[in-house]
Length: 226
Ligand SMILES: C[S@@+](CC[C@H](N)C(=O)[O-])C[C@H]1O[C@@H](n2cnc3c(N)ncnc32)[C@H](O)[C@@H]1O
Image (cartoon, rainbow, N blue to C red; front, side, top):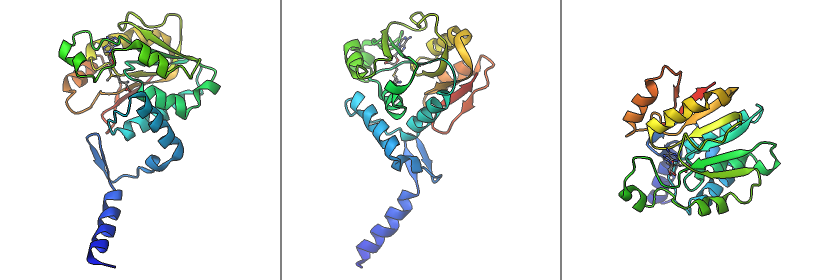
């Protein structure tokens, strides 16, 4: 074995020990990234986003875990802030959503945030096409894309077992959560995508103003159990 091969072998072993993505570096076990079901789900998410990869596999792992956990509860699933559909497409693939006797409501303005600028929309980070989202989710009959501002456009008369809140606008997020409260099942998980995420400090402060018991996850997500 050449010296180069020895170095490669040592460094690849060393780096394999580390998860280093999405502002999270850890040597904790992260075997989920090799799980074929996880890979399939993540790939479907990437298909939705047109290949835009935020390299946020641990965040997706948390979302898949929480969604699976909530399957045993009565009630539907809801995503507030869908964008291109990365997370919710991954969830629906992972859970084989067409076989699930629940509805998945997918709410988004498809116009960015309420206070967002034209530059925000021009950047392409936010999906401004309802049709694109609708086409992405067409394979699941029990998925419903709703265009409108939150919290005003929340689907009425529904109960939810799992909610993913990801608006990149803490004020709207908290208002949405408060509006949702009476319709959350006991044991429901509300997953916040950016609660403790680096750069979202004002969002952290806004959420913490309301006396809620929020778990900060090292991925930057937050979790509320109802
Ligand atoms: C970060 S993206 C969501 C990402 C998505 N959850 C994913 O996994 O790819 C935030 C989305 O929230 C939407 N949004 C922001 N504020 C909103 C509001 N008040 N009402 C409805 N949609 C909103 C934006 O249009 C954008 O698509």
